[in-house]
Length: 294
Image (cartoon, rainbow, N blue to C red; front, side, top):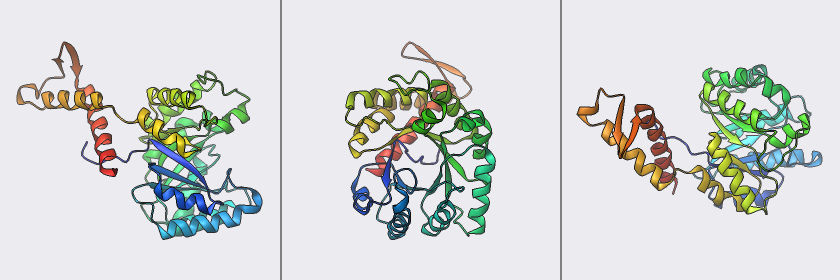
């Protein structure tokens, strides 16, 4: 794995109607910024938010942070203009809410071409409806189609709870089948996936536990609603020093000429396969990308 991966451990929602928040975002140690035109913005502030986000993204100053604009749904009164303005501002990605099926992304991908979007501009998909859970595999498969530009799933657990009437309880027992379905769909499509938000941002212990859970499930990172959540999020989703040391050790051993044709070797009393070395290479690449941001 030679390409430097982009860490997406933390993705902080910032309301587009709050100019002060948009400016403060330039100073936060966060991997991704989700500049929101949808849920965090009241109807009477939609146009202001669109203008402020457009100006902020165009002006730049966000450094290595990945900048993503979440637009309103295309069936709303604001969605189409949001998309046009977002394309012109040219963020790293546009986050599409309420994706129910591949056709939703295909429609927007077509409009990106019509509006003359940069080839580097990607789409992220909010997975937050019952339809999305039933169509997760087909939506994830869009990641294999370069014309659709899909590069990341974002779990919208609050909306999913609302639409399904499932309860968001500690441990997220009711959500687990959908979360893991989306992890599998994302991996099958070759894209990243970010866990949903943790609402009780004052509950540091509960938040840290949910971050650990998300990392164990295979999520690449987590969406956040408050800057105070960033540090714990990074701890959970960053490879540990011990993990990196082990990854480097087994890869160095597999790279030795005498092990070139071996599918498994013994290291420190453990049987290690090449798949473990490949997993280690990704951990090393993420660690290197994190170090490059520092």
